[in-house]
Length: 345
Ligand code: DAH
Image (tube, rainbow, N blue to C red):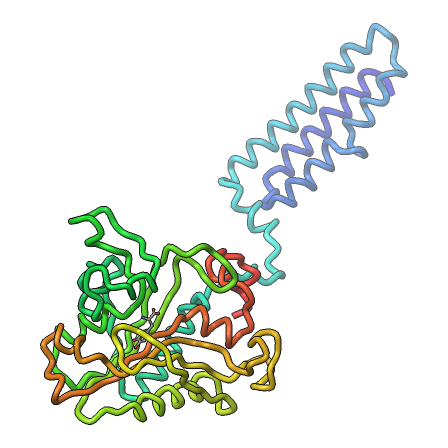
C-alpha cells in the first residue's frame, strides 16, 4: 500500500463512518460501530500495519493520517453518545431484566416481644385486661406499698439499681412488675383482672439465667370471694394454654411480702416431660415464678376494703418462659442481637 492509497482508504472509511453514525441508536450499536471503524479488522488497523512497509520519510505522514482518522471517528462516537443523551439507551440495553429482583429481607418481632404478646393473648382470652407502668419507679411503688416499709429485710430479695433523683434511694429502676399492681389498684375499684408485662432491672451479674435487664409479666385479680383455688386453677389454665395440654403446673410454699400465703409455681420440664433430667435437676419440674393471695396490707395501701375483697397475684420472667419453651440455654442470647439466633423464631 502506497502513502496515497493509505490516505485514500482512510478518507473513504471516514466518509462511510460519517454516513453510518446516524443509524446508531443504542449502546450496542455504538459498540458495533466502534468495532467496525476502529477495531482489529478496521481500515485503521490495516493502515497502521501498512506504515512499516512505507519509505521512512513517508511514515510520519502516514502515522498522522491514521491518528487523524482515529480522532475523527472517536469524535463521531462521543458526539453520538451525547446526542443519545443520559446513557438512557445504555441502561436499557445493559440491564438484564430476565433475573428476578433481589428480595429485601423482612424483619420480625423479637422473641421476647412475641412471647409477651402470646401471653397477653392467653390472658385476654381469660377475660383479663393489659396494663403498663413506668420502668423508673419510686420506692413507694416498688417496695413500700407492696408491704415492705423502709428497712424491711425482704427488700434484699431484690438487688436494686437506684437512680440519682430525689432523696437518696427514693427513685429506683423497678426490680419487678409488681409496682404496676399498685398503680392499677390506685386507678380503679374492683373487680380487677389485669396482666402487666414490662422490663425490669436488677443489680445482678450476668449468668445463664440472670441478666441485669429482663422482662416480667405480672397478674392481678381482685374481686369478691377469690380463693387460692382460683389462683391454682388460673395458673394451670394458663400453663396448658401456653405450653400445651401435656403440661401441668404445681405450687410450692414460698414467701413474698406482698402475698400471704405465697407460692412458687413450677411447670413440668419441657425436656423430659417430668421424668427428670439435667435441665430440671432431676426433679421433673421447672420453676417459673411467684404467686400468692394479695396481702391485706397491700389493699390497705391502695384504699381497698380488705374485708370485702380478696385477690391473687403472680409474676414471672418472660426470658425464663422463652428459655423453657424453646430450649434456650443462656439468657444473654436475648440481648446479644445475634441475627443467627433471632432468625430462628
Ligand atoms: N415480684 C416477684 C419477683 O419479682 C414475683 C411475684 C411473686 C409477683 C409473687 C407476684 C407475686 O405478683 O404474687 O420476684
